[in-house]
Length: 280
Ligand code: ADP
Ligand code: MG
Image (cartoon, rainbow, N blue to C red; front, side):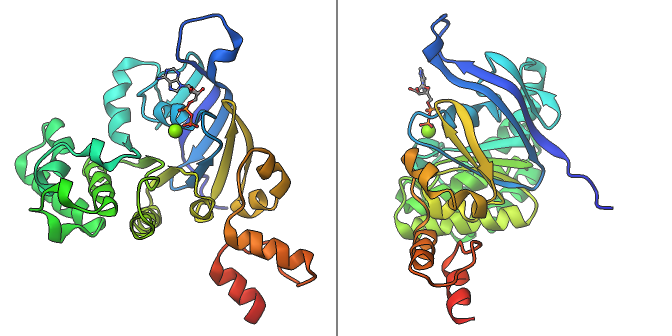
């Protein structure tokens, strides 16, 4: 028998309203039930305004439920005494890398979090070096963050979160403002961290990024409307289209080849899969 997975995130009947009003339409989140296991890689998709960022902010107690309950690492986010620990356990990376720069050198920037934890300076130095190594930015430790490329800045932002030694990394459209190269750098970094055991929750509007996840969650109007493996999810082309979402280009190509009579397994998600199917 396998060891049962440890749950790191749990939501039960989670609802959230930005304003204190009785109007029905103003729930940014409603009836969210969710369980995420330690080590999982979950991608969250959905149209603009569907509640993705609002949900993300519940994962590290930046927002607290209006109704229902949210646990992170077994701790209720509704209890203020838990916030300190929750925010170390679950770190957030946001869309705009420029808004996340807090210091004048990369090294100081990454040290900001651990310094706020009041750690001894030797420990801080060690954590900063390690975090920069993991994101492949050690060579830039003395550089000015604002002069880096977008992809490099986001990797520094990720290092800043890693220096807190989180178990869970929440990234809210971290590649939205990056060029293709920066996107690749960030996605490779995320993939590597997940392989090393960090739980990843990636909000994205790039379908091809969601393909790398273990599980996809699709939101609409504040609710979870679909959840499943990328394979299952991206076969539901019509439903995705109705939500204004695309299928990843490779899956689209596989679907079209299949309708044209080419025999292709439904498990094709990446260029490599497709090549393997056609030539393997
Ligand atoms: P997404 O990230 O999927 O685009 P959001 O979580 O940002 O969606 O927004 C969900 C809903 O909450 C939207 O209707 C949005 O207009 C509303 N909303 C988001 N932020 C605020 C805010 N600070 N104040 C009031 N309403 C907000
Ligand atoms: Mg958002």
